[in-house]
Length: 186
Image 1 (cartoon, rainbow, N blue to C red):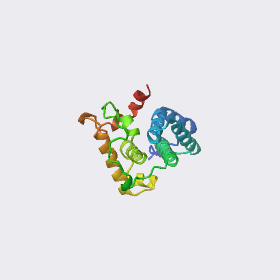
Image 2 (image 1 turned 90 degrees about the vertical axis):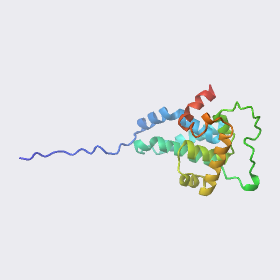
Image 3 (image 1 turned 180 degrees about the horizontal axis):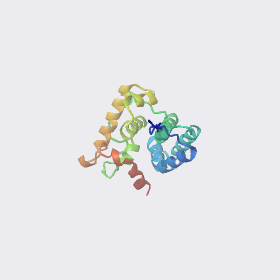
């Protein structure tokens, strides 16, 4: 005789209860704060952006466990965009000097160089290269054309790579960018 078997759905979606949500965010707090700082380039605005982003996430505590970190990062991006309002520079405003006020000493680290990019180039670089957001998502969040995103990323990469030796290119540093904040603040 056949015995009834129970089927367990191992793909069941897990929700992040409040305590799990805050545990995940506590583990990621350092990188979330660093993301806020790279976007705003100002300590006071960094704190405002970080606290606002976390406040928004607290309101949406019922998000799926797998989305928790991504939602926190997206909330910080949205708050930083509202605070800084980065916009593409038009051709008549562009300056092609690698860094305004650059001394050319070669002692600049990548973290400082990112902070010295124009606001729009910095946002595009952080969002598309470091955070790996699509060009379409970047253009939607920044309310600009996809072409503006492509041009800004190209300018940022050109500016950053012109100040580094071949072994320290910004593209290769993407995997380790979060550890730079510790060294920068030490």
